[in-house]
Image 1 (cartoon, rainbow over the protein chains, first blue to last red):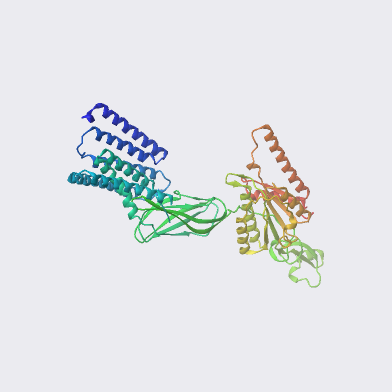
Image 2: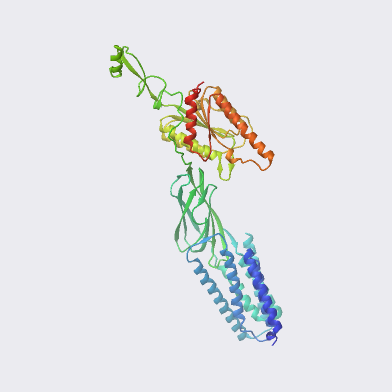
Length: 151
Length: 424
């Protein structure tokens, strides 16, 4: 398989290093936009792996989802920690529990969705329309969030 | 409260949209799986979020303090609904600082919860402060939405200037008819021995000096000086000050004025205040503890207000400057209007003494030769002003931060003892 090819491994390692450096620099300079950029880079890597590997469903997808989500959550938390606010005792433990719950939830959701896809296994326009609706829903959410931020 | 979305919402929604479109484009459902948590979390957060209803109270340990005192401030925060994270920022005016932690803190509120946060505030400078500008930021459980609000719970804190130690004060030349602690120059009923004279009809037997009478073979009585009070006007020059960082001549002048007012009032003198500057403020002479607080409260309002209008003593209400009053001027002698006004007071035969709060430590000479020359000329001009006052019979004592006020006043007392020109 191409994924076993040394060239792809090296390219992925390079991209992952760039993403890590970008994230570290962004966190150091307190630039929040580097967090989604890092996730996009890492997601791009995953897309590349998917493209080169197989047409079958990848069972690692929920783990990738959980990992990317965990990276984003921890990165945003580290930005919040660099503020001047003094936290009361127990705040960090609660946040760790929240992040862990969210990551586990993301993996569980991924497993469920993957199982659903396996179960339905029907492609065609219905699934495409569903995907398009979901994407548009995400865009709507984006617009809603932008409106709230503007308010 | 004003809502705002966290940057996470925008970022996650954007990521979810990008991943879903990519999933559609390359027809890989795995990317939809990756996108799912990024889409679901903001959606859940926005649906479940409720604006927090937070109430805030501010409790001050005491309404008054002295400079360098520490005062406890309690922020009482309550809410009917749980607030996962409530950030509080207490705005403190310049002159006050928090002792322990920063003034931004976060806490978590449960159902019908009330929490009290105790903060120690150190008073760095005298003044009339209003504390209570509290800014709040509440976050939902997932940290996706924030609500910001500002609570105005202003409470007044009066910080009085730290008194200087004084063993003696400037004794007035003239006294008033009321009883006090100042030995009057006149003769009358009192404790202090003044003179001897022959007995006349009407003299009390207890005032006969039997030893002197025996030596002279004629009845001789003691004459005494009565103890009277005096009128003292504290003249604070607020035209200009010299400042370096958080130290200024006005700070020192206010501290000296408050100290002198307290000491004179303890002696049962009538004390008045004239704050002569861009804004004229005055207090007619009065006695007692009430007058002391009136004076100190008036001093807390002292500030330098720039004003180019020429002002002289004629604008001061006459009842504020009673004749035969001792006028103690506390001034940096920086503004010609104050310098001329004091000379004018002397010309009107007021008993005047000047405590010069030296601006020299606040004005170091510049690096260049011409700067140093200008500085020397400025110091010479100040010498000339002091010499002018001394020619008028006015004692000028120069006070700077590094020496006790008591020692400076001793210089004034010595000048007045020897010059005997106070009423010249």
